Length: 398
Image (cartoon, rainbow, N blue to C red; front, side, top):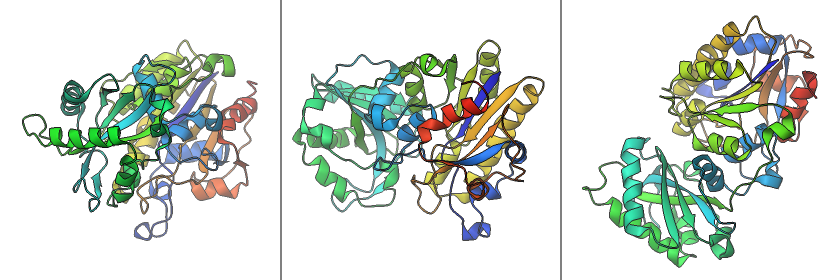
């Protein structure tokens, strides 16, 4: 049996007046997910445990079957695992965004958490320059992709910096940065680093992009996860454009498949991800395919783009996979990691809708897949990290 676990990041949302009271899921054209929902099981799962932030790091860890309350140390360490960084047990790993602020003062606000979705070919030299000019025995800058980079603080987990609570920049779009500057000020070394980086980014011979500040956040000790094959009994792979998913895959011993042209945006290589999934499934059991587009559109506050992203997920990922595997015994898990409501432009704690379709699944008979239709069945998993094991038991694999 082949198992496809398909994730439309941030797909869930709330009803919008501009969509006639519909959510973006309800407004999107999703005949393939609707068909799988009608002939399968749908429900909701609480992917983010109470008391934890509703980030993609926490939520996707849950979706892969690992309890975040046990294994999560921070966003940075997961992305460090994607790069295979060699870290000391007491190192503190920060996620480092290149951001655009109105000004780096208490009167400033966060204009853009992604610096206009800066491209990797532009951001990488910037981060390399930051390392050249600011890197030392205490701090090392590591370039990642687009606006997502890393800062490793040697033995930082032994300092008070480990307890600093910096807002994820995508949570404070168009909001004041004053509270976070106050937090940065509690660490003299980090404070100096942020302002020295600002001075470097102002040099137009180094940086012609929108980026005018660094934003360290999501810090933690190095990540350690159980082996996925040992916990699930399956040889699995992850396919995603973002280091977060690649890091979870690397840390749990899964194959990590890179797809050329995968961007993490609305415009991405959909067919490349489909082809990579089908190729892996020729000789293996399980593939986790992650699309970031709906989440990015949610952060951007565009209902139109998010509806389009969800529609494309259905037409360009779910549909071709259904067609290619129609004559094979296949099981489907389709969901999102968290909600990214248009009105909030950030993640929320809502339980996510999911579809299970395969052996052992009684037909729900429900005509469409949405937040409300999933809620109507009364099926809710209070611990999101149990969704995968629940699905495998339903399919008769556990």
